[in-house]
Length: 348
Image 1 (cartoon, rainbow, N blue to C red):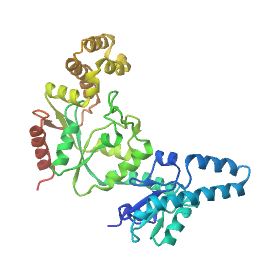
Image 2: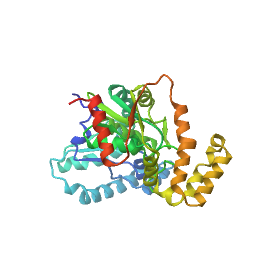
Image 3: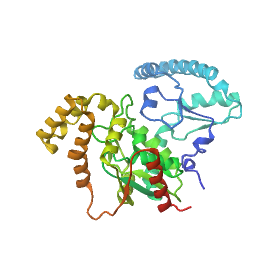
Image 4: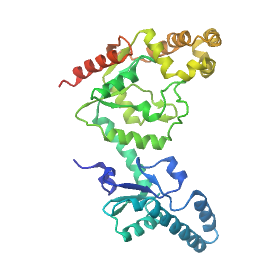
């Protein structure tokens, strides 16, 4: 089968021993090819200096930029490239595949390394990512796990993966659990472009002849958005409604939201925007539970008074949901449910 990277005029990304992003650290932080390393031709400060000088004296700017580039490449060759054997194939890219890529590629070719330069650079790569994200979702056999908050969907998804099923972990890619409480402590979300790049990498690894299990998601997961074709594919795919006893759901909350269990007043503060939906009396009740340190009762009340009714309202009446009732969220219960799902959609 033709590798999708061939549309970019290069070999599959996995065939390169190293992918070098020659852009500045700021450009790299916004987005880059997954697995690439940032070896900038010029640092952020050097890039700004050369750009400022170019506005008044282009020739001098090129002289200064060339000196910075040669020094930096020489340092990287000694610190990084020297560890590669001579047969290792390298891929270089910059913003458009121009001067910065050539400044890297020529010394490496002179040394004897096989080197490819990404035609059109990161800009061509970004257009390719958008095109691939438009096309790939329709080729997948998506199977969706629905259900209210803390019903065990994520744990069931992990159990499916452990049993050999194909899964797509959108919340893992987004570094966010969704909803007002979904931010992960100490883990900032990726930029939208990095999310797109990592999502495409995950989609490209899936076998379209086999089912792919995924959690139901809204269009946005925290601050990142799903591509429209993927979101539409999720909405039209068969859906299994996961449920679990309330005690098990409270356990999920206690473990997955341990930072809020330890500081329940912070959780209630996060839920203040829900006042028009749940009413002031409910928020007052939640605050009282938080002040008393009764996190378990607070978690249960938030699910019963907000998340469960919200989930019920979101369901389409015509949508056929296949029930999956978890006995608990222990390993044995999750494994049994995963086996049953696999047997139902992918007999072996």
